[in-house]
Image (cartoon, rainbow, N blue to C red; front, side, top):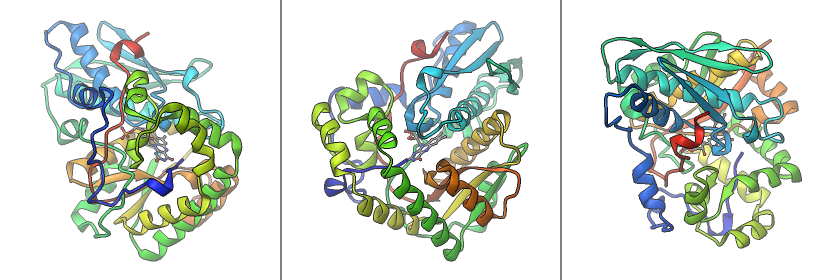
Length: 360
Ligand SMILES: Cc1cc2nc3c(=O)[nH]c(=O)nc-3n(C[C@H](O)[C@H](O)[C@H](O)COP(=O)(O)O)c2cc1C
C-alpha cells in the first residue's frame, strides 16, 4: 500500500513533519504517544496500561484490527472482523500479522510492569491469542522504551549503510519461531526488490477496488484523523490537509502511477537496506509470529535511531508474491513483509483509538 497526492507532496528530510496540523491533532499525539501510567496499583488499571501500549503497534492501513478481553491475570487478543481489508488482504494475513505486532508490544509492556507472558495461539473458527500473566521482577527493556517512539516513516532516508553490529542486532530481533528475516544490503539486491515493488504497485493502482479501499482508510485532515482515531492520516505521508469531501473527490484523480513509482524507487535507493520477513508455513499461527518478529525488529531499529517503512506490494499481489519468493530462494514458506530501513527524519504520527474502544 502506498499513495501520495504527488504534486504537493514533499518528504525530503528538511520539510518532513514541520507544519502544524490543527483540529486537536497535536494534543491527541501528546495523549497517545507515551506509555500509559496505570495511576493506581489496581490490577485493571495495569491491564489497561498494557493494552494502551499494545495499541501503539502498527497495523495494516492503521485499521487497528484488534480487540482485547481482560481477565484477572490474562489478556486475550481477538481479531476484529469489522476492520478487515478484503481487497488488499483477502486471506487476513495482514490482520494476523498486525495482531502479532500488538502481542509483541504487550509482552514487553507486561515485563516492564512486572509480568511475564508468552502468547498462546488458539486456532479454529474463532482464533485468539491468550497471554497469561505470571508475576516476575519488573524490567524496562530498550524495546519497551522504544514503543512510544516507533513509527512507520514514509520519507527519504540518508542512504548511509548501517554498521555490522547494528545489522546483527536487527537480524537477531527479526527472527523467531518459524520466521526468518532476510537482510538485503547489496545495491543490486535492493534494486531488484525495487523492480518487484514497481510492478506490484502498478498492478494495485490499476485495481479500482484497491484504490477505493485505500481511500476509505485515508484521513484527509487533522480533524478527521482525531475524530476516527484510526486510518492513514495524509500528513504521515507528507501531504497537506484537505477538507474530507475534497480529498475523497481528488484522491483517485491525483494518484499517478508514474510519480508513485518514482517516489518508491527514490525511497528504496535512499535506504540502508531491505528486510524481508518469511514464514516457514503459510498459516495464521506463523503470520502472528511474523508480526511479533517484525515488531521486535522495528522496536530494535527505533532503539538504534533507525527508521522503518513498508514496501509490501510484492507480497500483497499474489501472482507477484510467487515470483518474489523464487527471487528470495524461498520454497514452501510465505514472504510476509518487505521493510526498508535506514536513518531519516521523523514524520507526523498516526493516531489511535482509546483503550475503551478496543475492549470487549
Ligand atoms: C501487516 C502490515 C502491513 C502494512 N503495509 C503497509 C504498506 O504496504 N505500506 C505502508 O506505507 N505502510 C504499511 N503498514 C504500516 C501501517 O500503515 C502503519 O503501521 C499504520 O498506519 C500506523 O502507523 P505507525 O506504524 O506509524 O504507528 C503496514 C503495517 C502492517 C502491520
